[in-house]
Length: 397
Image 1: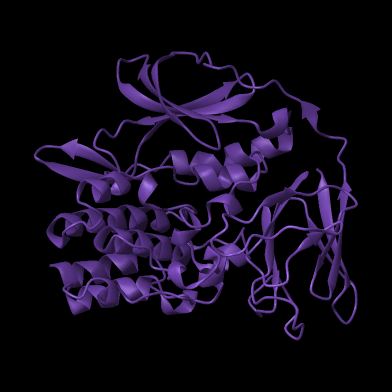
Image 2: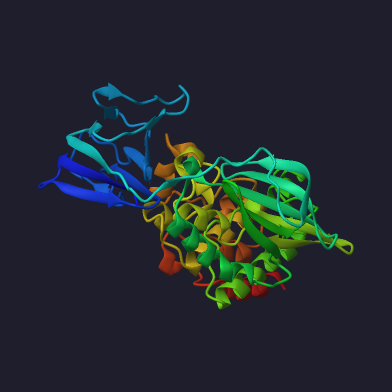
């Protein structure tokens, strides 16, 4: 596989290499929380820049630093109020300078990658009829479909990044997904099947016809009343407890993939995409996506997942669930993004706002449970979905 190496040639007491052959994030700055910390450099910002690696790609983004980040002598920085800092694609031989640090990028190419075809506009899937396109995203397109047995379903197609198909990567992805596809629970979206088509992969799953946590927030003007939110939060915790009990971690829980389905007179919450997005990225099948969506995706991720992209455990999911509940009730993110230049700075600095400060009228006991779930330190959270479910039952009964 391709391998990217960053060499910190100047700025540290001794040169140091960081190598990446899978999807990772790298953060440099004065903060000791950064992947590479240079705490005594007065010309570095606390969180200076971030690079997202998904070999052979690497993309750099300055995080609103005071003194700028330079790539081959060219400054790449946007000041507050002047738009988003530019994202800079890096290549072999590039030299990055920030403060006293001089960093060199090297790419070792892999001979094992073989060309693959780009996915067709509308793939042909065996036994599945695509009815209409529902949307598209960074990984591929989403369709309303009809299965061979007549059931309506949602089909997600996932393009193979860069038209490169690595057999080892695909096997890793399919192995990781096999266990998640066997999850059967009323609060988890059911998988109906999967397969490959020319240039991509597809997954067929249960149709949820009543939107998501995000659309529910929008229909309620941002804040969902507690009486409507409470049963849905319990259902999400119930689904999470079931998955954690089978040693499955979601890795990418957020309001957009907590879906709603009309059942009887009410709504049922169902967790979608267990492992789908993150396993796809971890297998190196996708392009760089994370740093372009910091405020809307990383807002639901704990700090340890940002600083160690491949790190996941049940406590990681607990934070993401708690942050989703927080947004549902408060109509705002748990992180105080308004106080910083760049979203990642708020995450690294643990700038979380207590729920009662956002919504003073909520029960104190409930606020305590959610604040514990979104504690910046993993050891201070509930350690599993089962613990979160028990705590919620106690305060919502």
